[in-house]
Length: 77
Image (cartoon, rainbow, N blue to C red; front, side, top):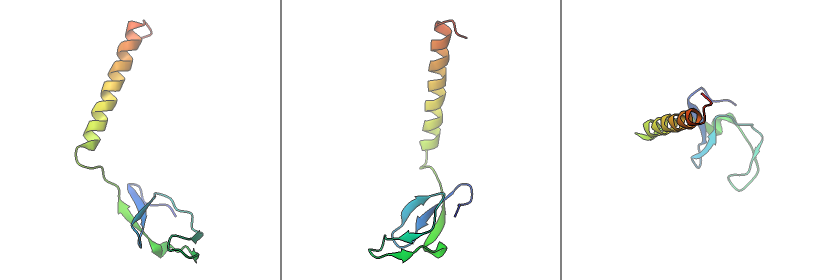
């Protein structure tokens, strides 16, 4: 199963985050073997905690600036 873009799956009975793709088969998370079924999972919207995305972008921008500076110093740009 593949989640819609921007969504991940969680397993309903224990809220375990499964990611954006699940290959159904046998599940042992309840302590016994059971056949995995799509209704055991729920899609949830993936969100970044407030402010974290901006911090990541700033970090990437600084890293890019640092790389450009080093390349310029070495005469490679």
